[in-house]
Image (cartoon, rainbow, N blue to C red; front, side):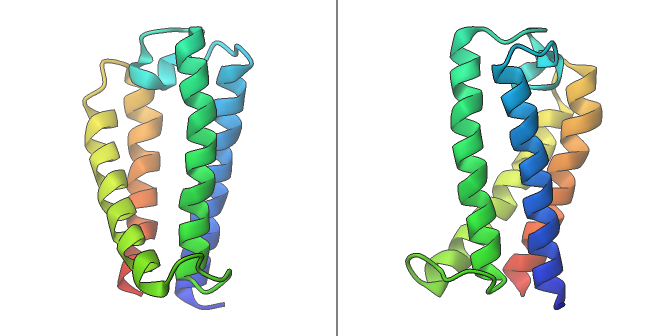
Length: 128
């Protein structure tokens, strides 16, 4: 399996894990200290809605990774997919910074490294 396909597969697995995490937050699990700035142990309704939106966004991120690795057909064009993957690389790099400066220690310890790994995986895809 080519390196870009391995990167896309790992990225999708991480995004799936994040989606499961978001589902648990929506269900009321007391894990809010690791998300959305860590201000709430159990998320309020507005942040639960945001978690639901995040799940849909993760699916789009995963599709972009799979399309860039030629594991699915791009919806628009390969150029659009290439640009999207570069944008997502920057998004996850920014996520490292944002999670790294969070007031929440669990968010810094878990989400910053997760964003770093995703930034690296998307960089591999962008360069591929």
